[in-house]
Image (cartoon, rainbow, N blue to C red; front, side, top):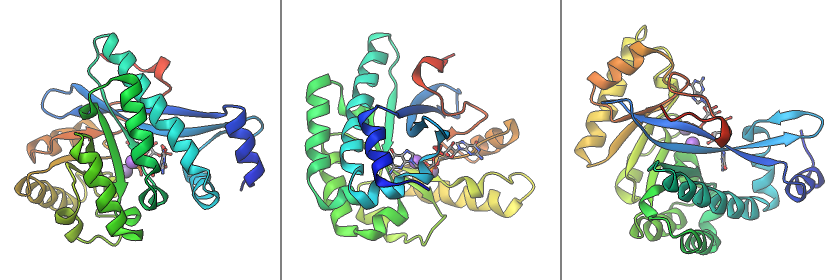
Amino acid sequence: FFLEHELKRALENNELAIFYQPQVSLKDRRIIGMEALIRWHHPEKGLISPQDFIPLLEKTGLIVPVTRWLISTVCNQIRDWHKQGLSMAVSVNLSAEHFDSLDLIKTTKEALDETGIDPHYLGMEITESTVMQDVSGASKILEELAGWGIKVSLDDFGKGYSSLSYLQRLAIDTIKIDRYFIYDIPENSQNITLANTIVTMAHNLGKEVLAEGVETEEQARILRELNCDYAQGFLFGRPQPPDKLSFG
Ligand code: G
Ligand code: G
Ligand code: NA
Ligand code: MN
């Protein structure tokens, strides 16, 4: 586990990096976007997963400057890809800490203005458990961002203490089916049924669906047959630094 001073040093020494994982359209396998996933290159301990340091960032409030850096870097990356002819959308993950201040709104506005990118190419991912910590705060912030054209995804859907009411109450464009429901398809036919039900429900509510954690061709084929719109997972690519990504 880590200490606050180590994290402060990490920020000062630029030890944090952003990896990108492709998100594809299941119809034609085209890469339509990327999820931005934060990493910590610790000088002694190597590459550290966000699960091991995001909670401390949240507890210490350091998540605010980190997210400022994240959103600004991501918007610059989107602009650079566009210059190369790649119309790539990128989504970032939000914490509950962002819902009780207007800092996220200000940060996002500044990054959009500075880079001049179309807000449709920027996405925000929130989990159900994040939303639950502050439903009214989340709903206000997401409404504002969605009003500018930013895409909102509900991450890890089905995993936590889900409440279907969030689907109506929040400005959500895309539902991401948690990888727990995907990893044992096709052996687990109940999970095929659940995936099918989530896709149908999402489409009936006018939302799109992405399946997380797709690792095999058979899973991709089945999800496509269920009319699932998008997928993400090791089959299409692992999270990578931007210079290691391929777009073929
Ligand atoms: O690749 P993986 O180890 O990247 O991600 C582990 C978890 O960390 C995921 O739940 C992911 O959503 C979360 N995560 C990754 N990057 C960020 C980030 O920038 N902010 C927040 N709040 N969570 C992140
Ligand atoms: O909570 P979130 O869904 O944002 O977490 C993303 C996490 O899932 C990251 O740790 C990422 O590395 C991991 N991940 C992405 N694709 C796959 C996959 O196909 N299989 C497995 N097991 N993990 C994946
Ligand atoms: Na996510
Ligand atoms: Mn997820």
